[in-house]
Image (tube, rainbow, N blue to C red; front, side, top):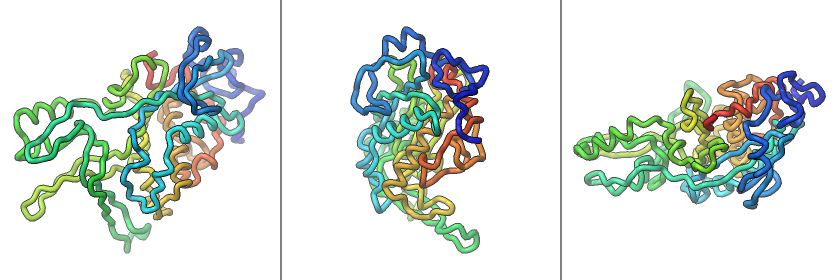
Length: 348
């Protein structure tokens, strides 16, 4: 049975405080009654996408999310010829996630609120010799390449490479800094400083210190690694789009490095590379996939790294693409893993 048992909660759950009647595995939501009575300024919830002050309820569980969004996402250059990406709107996505989270018949029974902030890749600008200026150490402006197989036929399929000239992408660090003739002493020092940082450092660096009770969600364009090749004596740089489009690293003893990131542009483009689909998403399919991915990754902050084999669960290990969140009903066994009070991505 996958529907929630509203009349028989988990004995370990607190039915008097911060519990809407679902069998969550732990009592409380980590917010004090004083914090809930004082309330928070938020940018949206399942009922509105207008900025407002809201008082929370000590009788319900609430999840607060800081969303750092790369500005101008819908205007990014995309591999998808139907431009499904143009349908993207962060408020639309978060409101659908909040609606699912708050549903006690098929969702999690948790009221979700979010605050939006711009995301920028941090670090000082630099200008490698003979190359154009780079605004931030973790941004790339140039040729972005996407590789995928033409079909699911293991014998007759071919590898297809598509390129987006003058596109922008997130990168972990820039290998050009140690590639001759750019490996000057100054560049090498800069590279060493950046390369030694954890991959999730951008999660910590973009946190708002005033939102300590909020878990962290970053909406990027793509995740990619810089590549280099030599052709006819010419050095060519590009970035390869990576496949991990939705990620939630769980790092022990480093809560400020924890959080979720969603590669919005890459999700809009991924359908053509997916086994069994091999076509581009429509705008509706892209939105459905994006909403499910966001809800799924945020739930990892509540239950850890667990996945389930059931295709209709929120935490399924099988992608419900492109139908997305509409096919999902959270199951009792995954509900019982939820520990909102001990959620990741905040300092307890």
